[in-house]
Length: 448
Image (cartoon, rainbow, N blue to C red):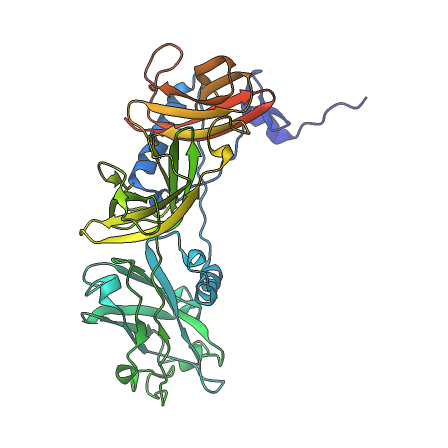
């Protein structure tokens, strides 16, 4: 049996060995290295940011041993991905699939030459936009960012070849972007202007009104005579800038569904992004010829400005016993504007009430919740049922149900206490239902 060979450098470090991702220290202790994924914190809503902070704080406070956190970041060029998304969005016929999970409208300014073997110098770009969708004077209001595209990359001995010299409001509905070539004394150092469309600039504008269109176009008359070759003396002539981009801005509502629950109906909807949305109202009619009546007593508040998916639900407990129900959801903006998002029709069948045909956590209402939430679930046959609450560390902090249950629809309330009747911190938790080999989990959010 051969002896383990130790390198000389190992005599000067505290690590004895590494086995199966566990670091064995020379003093006999052990350490575990865990790699976690990253999250774009800036793209989360305020509530999600708070929940993430609280969950992380709870995790840190639960540790009884020292840890070392190493953060590694790197720059990535995602311009090709952004171009692909932009192209697919223009080609997409389905309005639902046009939804972007962000509150900004992004596009590229492309450039090309009619003939090869030209190098470009200083350039001016004038872009018109729809003030109904983006507001007025977007540079002054800091609602636009512009970055250099592929054509403007490159340096000479560490000095950039091209710079975005200036960006101003040319009018309340137009911006002017000045691009400077920094080595006009050496025209041969300039970048080639290819004969195929290539990214010159990437633009990102904050959306103010999602019901409007983008209205993006060039102001060709102002661009004539202001596009130079790399000697900054010869001009490109003529300049053709007649492309337009006037598609609808992203809508926020991606789904609106309903299902029967015992003697009531659960309405659920999902948004892909929310900008300046106050909340939602729900309306019901019993036929397609009668007026819609408002269901909720007070407005159902939105989660605030958000670029992530948000899910909502509302339970109408007492409804007339009809065979068909018509629902519509109304989106209420902060400025008071209202618009109908979607309509759905629900039909009652024999399986809509009485005995359910499957195990299921129907949901918890409300979610997120402050002090308590009602967990609703269904049992298709008499079974021994266990419902637990787990934190994100996998610890079982509360047992809500642990008994034999009859078939039917049931509910249990959780008041945010653990098994020791102590209040748990804010953050995400997991509801887990298990019965007769069936297991289902659902994430919930507590915000005091």
